[in-house]
Image (cartoon, rainbow, N blue to C red; front, side):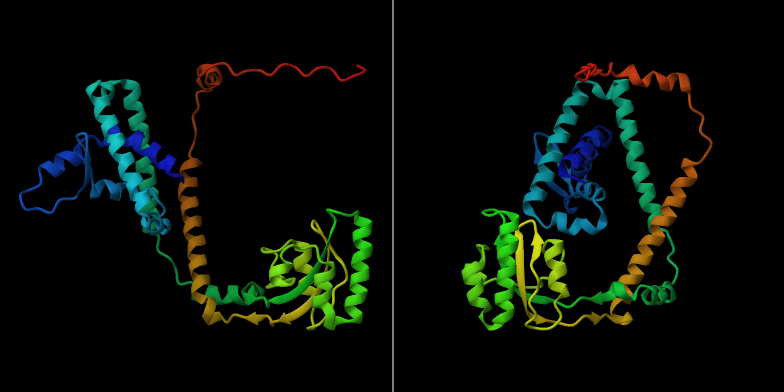
Length: 318
C-alpha cells in the first residue's frame, strides 16, 4: 500500500480520532514521560498515533518502512497536516454534517473490520506441521534443488546492422571456427562479437543458465552445455545470434530436509492461516442476502450519467 493510501486513510479517520492525543499529552501527570513526537499549529502527534498508523502496515514490512528518517518525517508531517485540517473542519462544524458523519462511520467500520481480521489471525492455533513438512519435501524434492551455475563466453552476431539471414550465416561460420580452434575463442570474441560489453568482460557471462537474469533462449542454451569447452550451435534471441563456449560449470546440489524444514513449516503455516481466514470471511459472505433490487438499480445513475461513446462509423463498403 502506498503512502498516499495511508494518507487517505488518516484523512478519513482524523475526524474520528479527534483531539484525544493533544488532550492526553496536556493532561499527563507532572513528571510523566511525554509521548509527544511533534507539535504544529495546535496539532500534536504522539507515539500512540504512530502506533496506530504502524498497525495499518503489514507486520513484516513495518521495520523496513520505519528504517528511513525521510519516511518517518513524511508520516509525521502528514499526520500533523491531517490533524490541523480536522481541527479546521470541527471549527466549521463539519463533524456535525450527516454526510461527513457517515464517512467517518464507514472509515471506523473499515478500521474495526481490519482489526478483527488481525485478531482472528493472531488467535489461530497452528497444528504441528513437522510430519506434513517432511511429506511435502519428499513429494516436491526437486523444488529444493539448487541448480548449478554455468559460466560461458559468448559471441553476439547482431541483427541490428545486418539481415537475419546474414547474421545466421555468419554465426554458423563463427561456430565452425570456434569448434576447429576452441583455444582461440578470445580472438573470435574480439573479431566477431557485436556485444559492446566485450571490452570489459571479453564475452564472459556468469550464471548464464539463470532465466531470471538472461533471456530464456540464452539461458536454456547455456544450461544445455555439459562439458567445459563445449561450443553451442548458433542460438537466436531478440539480440541476434549467439555462439557460446562453456567455461565452467558447478553441479546441482540437493538441499536436505533439515536445511529447508523451517521454510516449509513457515509456508504451510501461512497457507493454513489464509485458509482459516477465508473460511471465516466466507461464512459471513455466504449468509442469506436480502438486496433491494429497485434501490440498487438507481446506483447506475445516482452519481451522474455515464458518457456513452459515439457509435463507430460503418466499415468501408457497407
